[in-house]
Length: 322
Image (cartoon, rainbow, N blue to C red; front, side):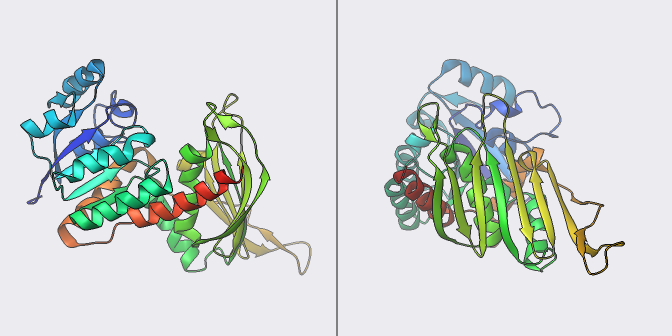
């Protein structure tokens, strides 16, 4: 690619680099560093983390320098794209420091911030600094989800009217993925009703059962027990069939409606399931493809500060009622 953008990653933990540390061939691209390493539109020029071990691992794996502070980073390199992969509570402070140096774009981990107030400040800062703000709700960029959205939009499943979501490890941390995904697929949040206040993941992140109307559909979010196993599954019921988004997006399939071959006048779901191919293990590459298209051709971002803020508003409203 003729246009290549220098990129740096701030925060070298799991989503910053660790999930890709054992990848050898680019078949797995699930971190910010891995994405910048493999996407031809970006040059990874540095990383930042206060932890010396994380910095050492980054240098060994990605063959570029790592620094203890953001100031050290900017003393040595001038990235035009910066990823923020630090804990959520630090997103605003890091973003505020980064935009001071006028990057073209910031890729911020989800959720956008720890509070709506901080998120609003980030959106305002991005606009004032003319910095594109992409929030890493990865599923909005994944090819399987885009195919599913097209099928829903063109009426292949009929009108979606009900659904369920099973999630674990916190409504803010993981439930937000599926709230934002369903906003992308079905429309804006209309209202919600808390069914069960539930507990808190790690004594911090609430895990309520809650019914949320998204677009024209009532979606029930149910918190599973993370100590038993992880859950990340969606089922959507439409007038023309059923969609299942399973195992965090590794499997997407649907069944349509057909006449019952025995009972006249009755309709059933087809026994055969129609599968939608996914590329969930390379999700970060697809996020960066969206960002590259935005930077070079002005293509709108599928997940930006405004869309992430809208999701956080609903999350905060729900949490405030617990």
